[in-house]
Image 1 (cartoon, rainbow, N blue to C red):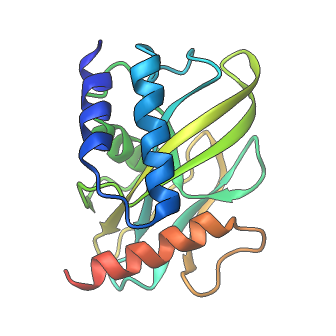
Image 2: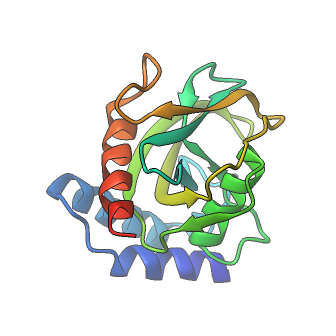
Length: 184
């Protein structure tokens, strides 16, 4: 078992899910890790863990989203875990930095949301499930994001006026981010 696998298992075992639906996903992710020693690696099928982060601006009123080049849809920042990632948190922070160009992010170390979704054509397989562990982070005021090679665009959207077609889970994550960061 890798250090990243051990961290993911410890993180998800300790995480207190806020709802019954999130608890069901937490239990499913933990079972996946028990069943798959390679469960954090992109080659693991039928699914593997991924890490994401929803970045909120200093005011807490805008979220940073990326227009994904392959999917042609707006998403939070995130992606596959890499061998160099020591923890899920480190993977989420790395993805946030890589996909936004913002390096001064204050990330909440506690996962905010879990999501499972099917992705076509991942890692050479026709269909793979991503078991996404999502965090929230705040960007320092005045930072300007840049577009990564994985994106067509990256921009700030009002939390209350996201782009059309954003999934309900992402809207729920935006509400969680606003609530968590309101106390900072």
